Length: 103
Image 1 (cartoon, rainbow, N blue to C red):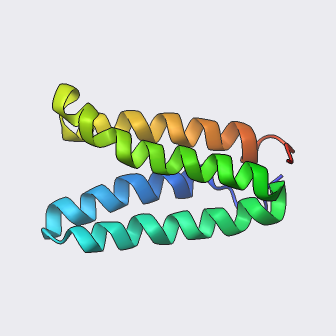
Image 2: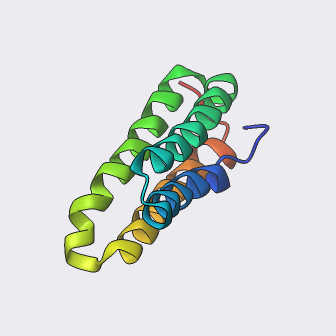
């Protein structure tokens, strides 16, 4: 199991990155928040669960970020971000925070 609960960090990265970009008008600031949270999580996942789980969860994190953009056209910006955050955080909780999955 992860020593750092990473599901909240995933949520903070996705929601915080979006909020930082939107409310400051600086997309690179949002990217920095997103990357920082992803880096913290990746380090924790590698230590606790191995490179396979880390790669899978980084893929989910990146897909959540990328998927929120087209989804926003259908749901709106905030509902889209909250939806992908719930999915990414749930997967993270199941594979890294709650489970001792390792591959």
